[in-house]
Image 1 (cartoon, helix red, strand yellow):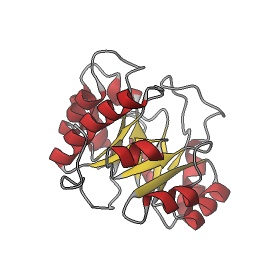
Image 2 (spheres, one colour):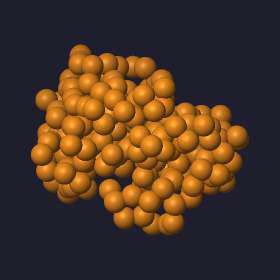
Image 3 (tube, helix red, strand yellow):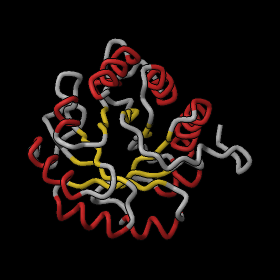
Image 4 (spheres, helix red, strand yellow):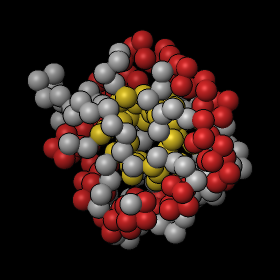
Length: 217
């Protein structure tokens, strides 16, 4: 279901601590909306829809279903990469990678009410994202991961410390984060964490989210 203008997503711009990125390539048991619902039960306070499908109508259907779940739970809902899809399903915002639409251009399109996150890997990119109007940054890859192919080697916790020390917006650590290392990411200065496989590919999605939530509490 696609949210209508009279059925707005939550307007909060508070960035959550546990971001779960829905993915159907690391597992095939659940669709995006099911993953979102199970993760939210476990304590996820931000859901990001991620799909590399090219069929826009399919993307709208899937993202719209996730939007419905998030709206019902009053959880922040972001769309990965696609500004057009963010607007089409009235998501709370969009997360943009380094090769996606620049943050400053996206801001002109979506306006001030939408959340925009940007991927960064170092303090210089943080400064650029802040200058361009990002509401938060996703910093990574922190650790090795099997959820996606990494473009660069893991940057580690020292980079979290360097970036967090100069950040004026929330820093969300991403890649290879599990219940066993999530706390170390927070202690290094991150505001929160974003995960794919450690929740979506877990035997029990809700329990995995609960473990992560406890780890970062």
